[in-house]
View 1 (tube, rainbow, N blue to C red):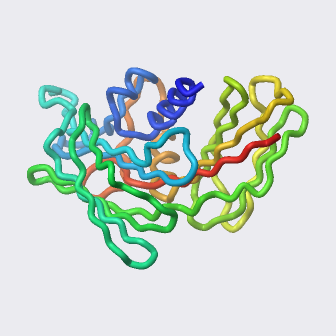
View 2 (view 1 turned 180 degrees about the horizontal axis):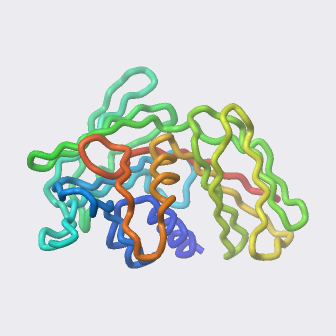
View 3 (view 1 turned 45 degrees about the horizontal axis):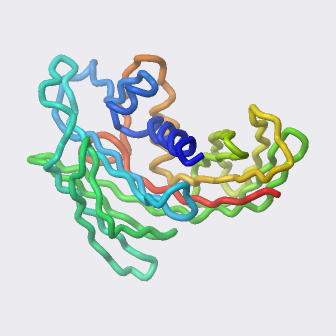
Length: 258
């Protein structure tokens, strides 16, 4: 079951990360921006996400840095093992904490001291040679699952309105079965989902996870995916300054339907 969940979460991340190696392997997409109509300019392609709340694992963040690649020259490689990533966490009481991330492997960076809470503001800064990428985000509030029931073959989920949440990724689990669905909430309105899984719902418990995305990740997810098709290049869309990619946050809540 844990392996099944890990695969589902990995594929969900692949949809909107800048990880070209993982993306090409699993879904056949080149995840680098499409700059074929513009002169090539070297730079950094970054991905950073912070998580808080209930989750399938204990990982509360994921950070990657890649080189921008010229389509005619891949000799430089994707990995950037010597970038400097600095994070600043500003709590609701205006207390500031700084974190420096260290290169791990592939394109990944980490700092095991990172803690996340809803409402915190985070500042992101990534530097390599003359390149500097910056961004900021606010961790969404934990989604409130106001009501969740099983009605026949449908799972009904109602999520309270919240101005910090801009996109929902909802998972439904029962035994070894997994179903996921995105939903864009309407401002100031509760969000209702009527999910019909591909399996027959039995009397055993159904577990629901609701992942609330901040504005940055919603824009990156909904805009960059519009043009996805097999073996097509990612369009040149970004939510960071000074480079390409995204930096944002996700808050997660779960509920068991008996």
